Length: 284
Length: 309
Image (tube, rainbow over all chains, first blue to last red; front, side, top):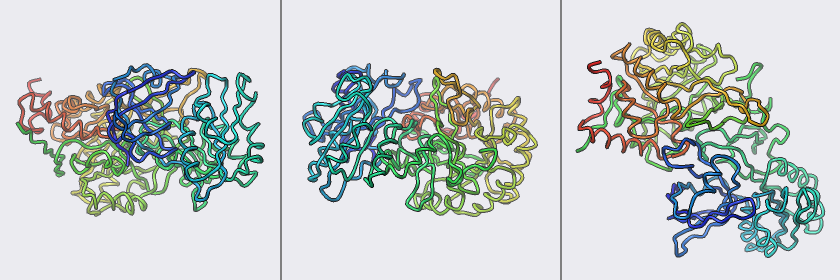
């Protein structure tokens, strides 16, 4: 169950093009698992920005000297994220945590590949630690446009068995996309499950590569949302259910993690004709 | 000094004037994680239609200055699932429930009302004749006095003479008082003012509409003065008709402004998105605001803006 916490900003550190924020508050780390996210109110109750912003959880530490802490990675690229990245240590931040369904972990100690694009790497070392603790082999690949948009590379190097970096401009690691190196990593790592977090086109390519090889994929999607708790119905995408029926499904409460083969990638941004309750001719 | 928050909405007695706004609280279950939903006046549920409905394509939301546009398009499970899941839960929870109903035509409104009539958990209906997120703008019944009246009359015929009906009106009309007259004449006990305003925002890069539905409904503090004006005008025109006021309420003082303009109860909507505890917080703040002005009850402040004018 999510808690709404008035958290104290304990640290705000610039890392490449991102900001690494540590938030402290009672219960803020309770029940947090890799893949969960938080939502943050932008400004006080008089703020002109009326919707919350969602961030995947980088790390959760219950019961430190400062109380529980929660870490997130912010990419300042709009009014809300610019505001958050500009906040000074000591500021009170309204945080709701944890939200969403986390990554599903394998029952058996299998080989896993963790794929991240840009700040999609935020939850990945947290996930890697959980998997390692279960005896899973963990391989990782981080991709970004350029080196300054990579996050947490050193931590990934430490925990991963095989680790690759790709950048579009070749400023770090292999020049290219994560999808260029994933097939070899699948082969070398005998991957059974692939986890991915990043931009939608990257998630789509990961899901497609996994499907070709009968590898289970778990993808954490990023959809814009107003509330993060399941009431506003803005963050939907077409997802195939256990019953084979496609529904416009909320990524905040039914996701953000979905099985890659359940996402109707070709139909994102549309309502497929065979979706439950799809509009007849003329639209809604 | 304790303030008596009890409110009368026609024949409906509320423990406080604070309701949730339809479409911003689902059926209350998610919000119940953040505050006890039985401690506010009541829950107005997301509009329900006869059949399951997917809603519109994404993007469905864009933040605008002190507001947001949405083009959800009435996504919902259909009335049968709503009765089985949502209403059952609300009944067990014991929350005062006003059910918002919608339809593609007057006949569908009647069918939905038929399915729901007599359910012991329902205190009243809010008849949503003003959702802007429909492909055919001609179907915004609340833009035409005759269409608005036709839908209300159909619903009235389904539920019998005494059941509380509130018609939710659109501000996108020349005279909202004229629409209010026509729905009351057709059998509405009261009106809900206001639904979202039709709006649009363009992507700064592509210079094309951002929303999947192109247009959307504007809500949030940006529309509050429009809502206050609508409540004030309708109260002046129809002194005895119960009014549920809404539009950008995010504090106790905002709620008080609506009561003073003539609302008997108020709905908290978009504020829930940034603060899911907002209805409870606003209720506490309203109590303080009323006490600070040396009033003892909600009843004393309702319509006070009209006194001596």
